[in-house]
Image (cartoon, rainbow, N blue to C red):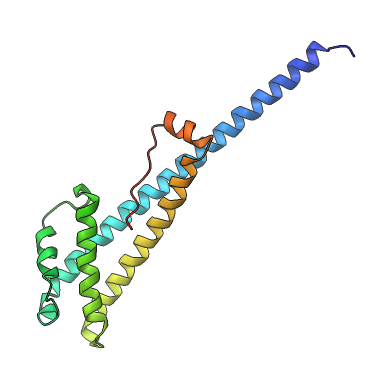
Length: 161
C-alpha cells in the first residue's frame, strides 16, 4: 500500500477546514445566545422597574394588605438604579412585589387588574430570561464550548430564581 502525499494533504486540509467551520458556527451560536440573554435581561430589568413604579402608584390599595412592610421595601428601591443592584437586592425587590401581588390576587377588585396584569407580565419576562440563561449557561459549560467561551471571555449569567 503506497502512501500518497497529495491525498493525505487533501484529507488533512478537509479536516482542518471542517474544524474551522465548526468553530465559527459554535462562536456564532454563542454570540447569538449571549445577545439574546442580554436582551432578555434588559427587558426583565425594565419590566421590574416598571412594575415597581406601577405598584408604588397604587399605594392606596395596599393600606390593609401590607403587614410585612413590603411596600416600604418598594419605596427603598424607588430611586435606585435596578441594574446596578446586587442579585440579592433585586430578588428582595421582586419578592416584595410578589408578596404584594399575592395579597391583591386573593381579592376580586376590578381596580387591581392593572397590578395583576403588570405582575403577570413581569413573571413572563422573568421566566423567559431564566429559561434562556439556563440554556446559555449549560451551552457554554460543555466541552468544547467551555474552551471557546473562555477565549471569548463569556461568563455564566445570573439566574434570577
